[in-house]
Length: 221
Image 1 (cartoon, rainbow, N blue to C red):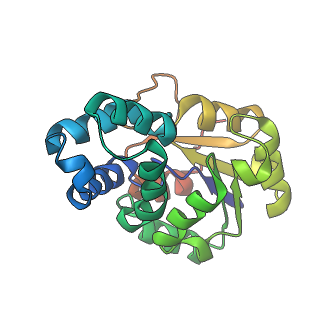
Image 2 (tube, rainbow, N blue to C red):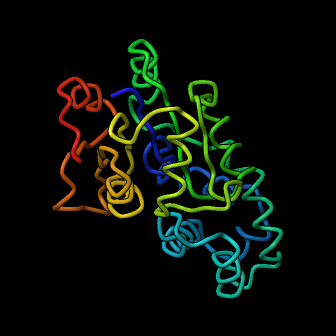
């Protein structure tokens, strides 16, 4: 293996912990919200509607403002989210040690993430990891989204490596693992409590296990 590429949300960013921190802070800061609904109800409903990030927040806030009769527009709440969320980003366990290990071993390091460009880059920078990556591809800027094979091939081209020389690490069985395998990359799936895949092949529970997987060279094709 010459290169290791990663998904971002749920793989490098502990998204569930980050969302909980942000939503709690938003509730505490905004009287238009906390005067209308109790904190646990607001947080639980946001997290439910958010669906682990697979529903964009304009729809989440439209529903919240309607349900709780919040005297603040959905767009104003969305703008607060875009501005404040990076202040609450939580790295996954072992993130920095893992990146340092890959650098020491001279791996090329890439990232492919779906999402809005400026927002995702703000979150990446909030974790202080932008400089560790040789290539970062964000779907909005690339005009391609995972699981489209073309975004994986574009990353490989930018890294100047062949597919069989690279491994992709992500938390989504289809968008990450299966999509990477279709272009000939190896794949490692980070399992999560809300998403399990019995046919994932190489599975880790957190990034601290990645070093051993790479050392054994057993990443699934």
